[in-house]
Length: 95
Image 1 (tube, rainbow, N blue to C red):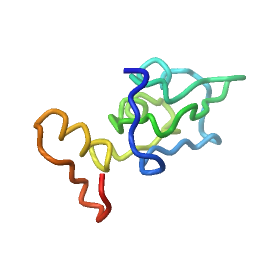
Image 2: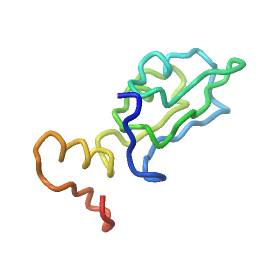
Image 3: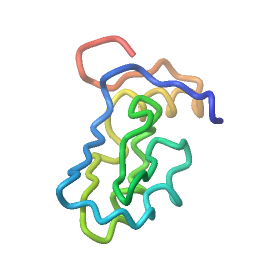
C-alpha cells in the first residue's frame, strides 16, 4: 500500500512543530509513512498519502498532530472501494 495515492491538497492533517517532542509515535502508527522524524522533530514526509485514519493524532502524547478522521475525499474514496459506490465527500468537488 506504499504507492497508494489520494487527491492532492485535500487532507485535513496538520502538524504543530512547536508542540512536537520528536518521540516518533506518529511514525510507528502511520500506515502510509506520512510522517518522519529527523533531528528529534516530526515532519510531514508525504502529506497527500494521508488516509485521515487519525492514528497519529490519537497517539501523539502532546497533541502536535490533528486530523479530522473519517472525513473528506480520502474517506470517500476508501468507502467507494469497499462498497463499489461512486465516491462522494460532499465537498462540492469531484472525488
